[in-house]
Image (cartoon, rainbow, N blue to C red; front, side, top):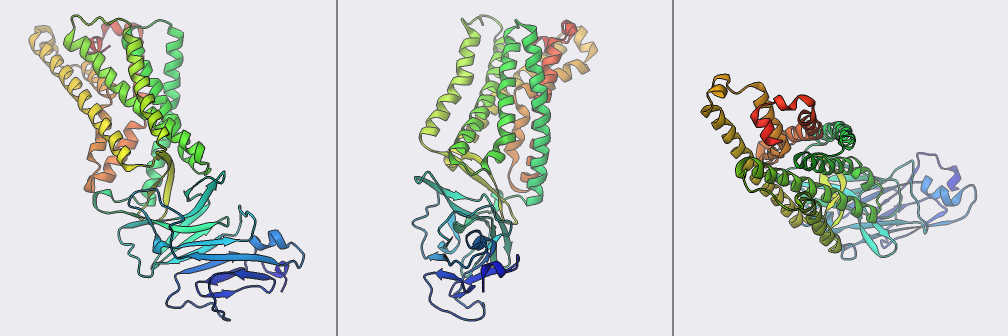
Length: 450
């Protein structure tokens, strides 16, 4: 039978221990058993369905013979897994090769990995292939593969030929992954919010450029806007660049995203420090080249940290596993220890700024109690809005991430993505409030915080 005579839906089916092929296709495999019907046996753990489209690329309308190699590897020592607590299902790797690179198939190559005796309870599964770049760098990549987890098996549908396996990552207790529907909704909320923030942050920068000279408070505020703008931009393009499967580009994207995050957190702290000098310390606060020194801290320290991590090779593809199988890939830190260090830095920043915000709030309340005029007027709307703006200025709203445990985990994610993706909008409103002509008439709290 000629390959050109096969229907578009026809596939070449191979199982572990059996082969069933067209006449003009030679299958070279490490297994010996041959039969007439494709039926699974007790020891089989892999089933392949190869679209004849993959073979027509070479056969065309001729009767040439094409060699198809299918190899099962009993151990994955040649294909190391970089992620901590992650392993390959049944330590199994399967290779499908015809001697040439084949990609972009319209009909999926389907590989079914049976669980057999593997324990997959509380584990996320994702189909991956061995991605080799420049013949020197190789890693597991999920691009071009769709994962479908069924009872007792995982089906990998891929658009190319390569070395394939299934990564297993533990999911339990408080670290349980979200469902695919929740991940989709959270991603949508984040993208919409970040897009809105990006527009308003750009508007704030344009207004600032037109203003020319500004005081230290507004300049620090603009530095924070720039850091947050970079964070929103890198977040929006991160997963798109990760899907390209280019390791070097993914490393650069991960480094840019991490740098933007560290800069944002650092400028939150510098806002708190500046507020402390203005309101708490008040006297003897002159510092030579104040903005230059703050700039070196706000942009320089995160740069040093990111450079060290790049040198250590700890940036790359990171997967967010879902409860119902599959994973979302992005470019981020590949070392869980460094991820915890980054989170600890966030916790430290949040704690410092909470102390600053609490001190300012106490001082404003005391001022209202001690002044007969202010006590009679009470806490008016301007004072309350000023304090809320100050809370966003210091990143206090990011504290909702501290509640990502147990039943509160998913709720905390929804609150965080909804509120903090709009952080750029709130910063723009704060900047506009501090720069409008009638700001002199704003309450004492607003004047002090500006």
